[in-house]
Length: 168
Length: 89
Figure: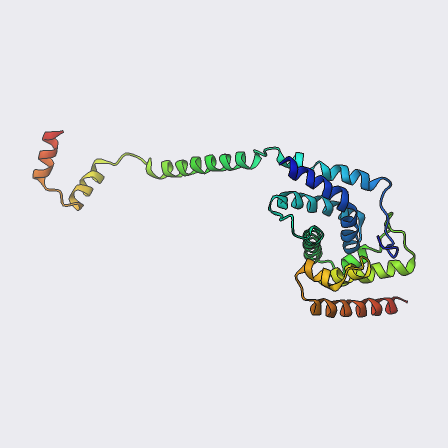
């Protein structure tokens, strides 16, 4: 048990910051990313005894984080739909002043464009654009084929481009 | 992280985050008795409710003489059986 706890603390030291950015780029808001990080590391702690040390820890952690984040995004969309908001309410929410957003107007438009993407396209787009992950790596994390990921990224890229052109 | 990122965090955020996350093993290893207690209370309430319903439906007024007679006639009890039962009582 003490070994597991020691290993968990090593994971926290090494991966909490990159995982935060992985989640933050998908959800946008600092508060949501902060809440999700807590939930993700609780899951990591619970799953750690079953984790095989020889498996790729990066892929394992990113898979847990990605699944949790997608689940969070799905719930947010359901909540928005149930409250009779428009389904792109999240895209509007990001236009609210955010003290932890440092970008210029173009970056804010990009943020809105990403928030308007369907969840899986958003995931592929942010993992490629912000994290520079290879399609092979994203495929290992998500369990989706490289071909399907390339198609999703291409569609997401075109949507973002169109969104930015329309917002000019 | 990539320089394209337009996001920031509160000052000292990651130190505080690491400290909070490192506390997860201690907080999660404490025995949480609340769900077990809730289960026990639910079970007790269920038993009490069942007992109340059963008592209410079966503990009605004692049968009248007329009801007893009708029951004995309907069940085909003979006079001989009745006499024998009364003698043995």
